[in-house]
Image 1 (cartoon, rainbow, N blue to C red):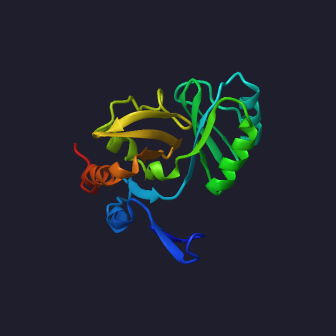
Image 2 (cartoon, helix red, strand yellow; image 1 turned 120 degrees about the vertical axis):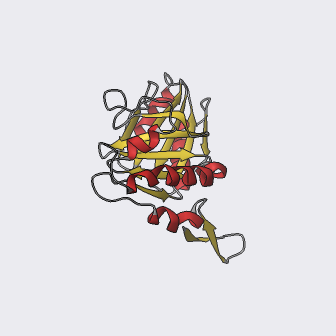
Image 3 (cartoon, one colour; image 1 turned 60 degrees about the vertical axis):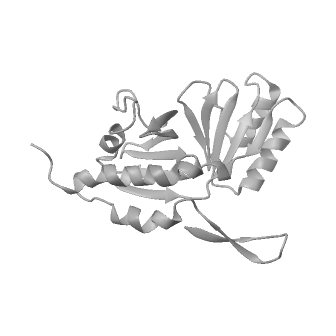
Length: 209
């Protein structure tokens, strides 16, 4: 997928292309409908901000106020408010996904951090987002993910760093659909998308007895 962006340095209309634009049609064609359905799509150009701060500091409190939700304090947890979702990456590190333009998010979070120790960095170009959804989505992931994805263990709001096939991803379950969002490094997104398309193909046929 491509979208126009204003290049303030040249004054010309520039185009940015998502890491999986060339596979958009193949992902659409791979969709399976019905009781064993599963679909795959890219969510490009999501605003992503890496935040490092002492969770016990006044700066963390100010950042939480800016986001409108507490920073998650446990492995695998997420918090969401409005258009912001914060993912726990480590004891003092979070990834914030936002529906707001990334420059605005970065500016607001840096203002909240002020002069306190920590960092707020735009990492939007580092990853892209794949959405895998449908009744067979968990089974597709289980072909190459070492996690126990059973609902008794992994459910909506959970997000962890893991692997799918050979690719490292941040895996987030969004809802009970189930819908998962996978955040691979942009340079590995092509391989992951092709792996998922292949893993989905089984569900076009009849269920095994």
